[in-house]
Length: 129
Image 1 (cartoon, rainbow, N blue to C red):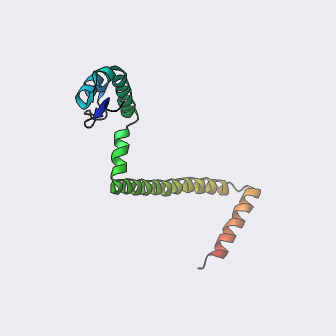
Image 2 (cartoon, rainbow, N blue to C red; image 1 turned 180 degrees about the vertical axis):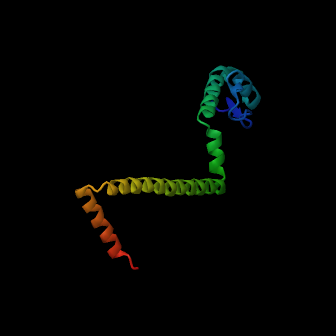
Image 3 (tube, rainbow, N blue to C red; image 1 turned 90 degrees about the vertical axis):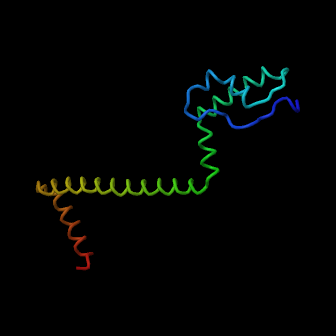
């Protein structure tokens, strides 16, 4: 099968465009030179391969992997956003927890109030001032 098919360039359709389904035949004929006797089996395989590449956005993945600086930048920004989200979320959850704890302490329930008083005493002993 040497010489049955030769590739001459990119896919010719930007990712995200929906015209790949109807114009798959044109992609094959414009970008590939196929010997006439091999044309039908290869044409369907190339169209199927192109549909899969559009579906899984492989062009975007290859573009990202070919530019390592952009990959590092995007991962750094994702880490910053993740860390910021964790910090804000932890602050909100701890504030809600402390508000609920303060409400429980104000009810003067004997067992819970003694436990909270012991916790406050331990915290005050550990503080340097």
